[in-house]
Length: 477
Image (tube, rainbow, N blue to C red; front, side, top):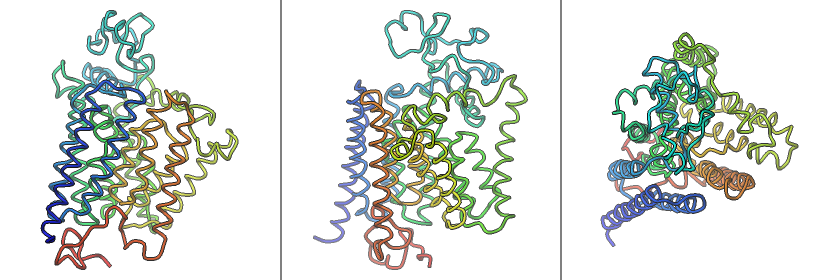
């Protein structure tokens, strides 16, 4: 068969698998399945996602960007077809935006406080009849009910996230607040795709952008559940790309990412990868810290209470300060007493961070950032699937696809624990750890892969591509 026909068939196969993926996501998000049923559908979507990425390997280079972009739009739109399915966090986002629009600091009051009774919109605080008909609404001490989770505690979200909530509140009509949050999540997810394509066309393989653009976690967590993590992901990717050449700007972007979601603090060692000059390190760390301080300061001045909100209570509730609760430190607890798990996790993360700083690739800071972030997930074994959105983007940047298994483990843990118990966390993250180890072993075999490549991003060369990257630039020595 002529090569042109083979390449045409590759585009057709990729498009068909993408259509199947989109259909599966629509059925999942617009349906009524919960628990095991939702997990089964989600697993099927991840399977189709993997097949689509594999099919993209055979597509011609000139078709990659259009395919990735078209698939990104189709996948993102599926998250808009229904209200949030597996999380109620976006209702807290809408409330925080509402409170700020009234000129009140979101850190000063819990949603259930009587001082804010005048701000209770009916869609967030339904009447007693709606409350009785739905078992998914949280109750308040005064007999009201609300869609907001943890209505008796103060907000936990950092100031850049709060600014995003206020912006969406101001830009949306009063009867479409939750839809505005979803649309905002879709816009941010597509912006991440565009940034990844821009970077990977110059350095790497643009096919890798599909690992973010088509990943089922993006429409489910980033769009449908509208988690603010997508904003942090966009800022994080920008920071890691820019910090290579402009340390101060990269540090400032990293500070904004941290002030959108605290999780990007794990990227600091990656941003310092291979840095030998104390002055350079100080520039990155100094601008990061200064940016975080600058965006927190207005809220500190305007708030009467702590701007950390429920952060301490959240850590305790999720078991991060107690190794015996919530499935945290699940892998460490297989070999260590519960009391030793937290110190061991901190020590392990510190060791990996030091290794990344000292021996990391200064030209590819996302490489060390992926190792540090992925290791943190394996050590802490978080139970919320949307945290892994950052990890998915780092996988796309770096190309080591096996770390995606860690992202999937978080989803399995989140959806399965209510049905099967905390033992699922150990099994999910244990399987992911084995996949990561297997991938690392394969990459260390002599001649297994070329430089800066991965088994799922290696692509066939078209005529005239010998010695060049997919974008047409010469391969770096």
